[in-house]
Image 1: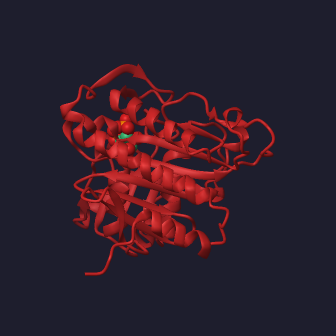
Image 2 (image 1 turned 60 degrees about the horizontal axis):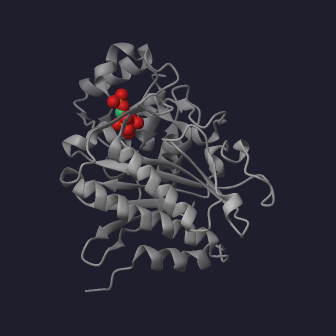
Length: 326
Ligand code: AFP
């Protein structure tokens, strides 16, 4: 049996191959991996600890905050700060970004955007949740204080994007713009091990994934597309946890849609820490990600930390089929 490649080994090996020899970026990625292991441990034991249920607050996006949201958020931030390699972080759970610059002796050039626990309304019923992350190079000088503009970058400026899926097994999937690789967590040795090298999304899939309950709130084009899916006996699959729904779409092909609704006229999902990192992964695997107007998600301007967008993401042929109805 051949020896498994761990996430750390893979990151170090690729740091040289991809001309990122400073080690700073690799170190940051590795710290995200470590934080993911801790979040995984807590998510797995959640029922045994007093951390299920609502926290009693809503976040800046108006979502009810779960206790585990806060736990995962604090933990990710602590690890990013302690890495000594991150200039600052923007998170779904924070109204404003946090700057670590004043606490650090070294000048750091990377900032991180995170959704620490995506799909958290699923936690209490033991359904898959995830962490989404993106890494950007800051645009302001490393000697200056961190600016909001450092975070308001288009998805096409991402230097890394990925997610951790806490599912039947825990997987970390990421890209640095050189393809997509997936690592499965091996509890026995406490490491993420390369299990899905060079992931590719099939050009076409038979699954479509959408909250069909909002059917009457969707545009006529989306309604017509959904009727076509139903006429063609396609398989409707929806977990309500973007990481899990997009991961399935990545593995099996098909399309995930969160269109505009009357309730969310700009779409529901957040550009910075949901749409862009997930689009980076799917595009790098050979897929496509657009908004309901047909624009490439990763080219859209980002004007605020918690900006929302509609998103249609998945296999080339499925996206072409949706486009015909937009
Ligand atoms: P929560 O983190 O509040 O559960 O929201 C999850 C999410 O942001 C995304 O992961 C899902 O795809 C989407 O919202 C589900 O939204 P609906 O409940 O409106 O279908």
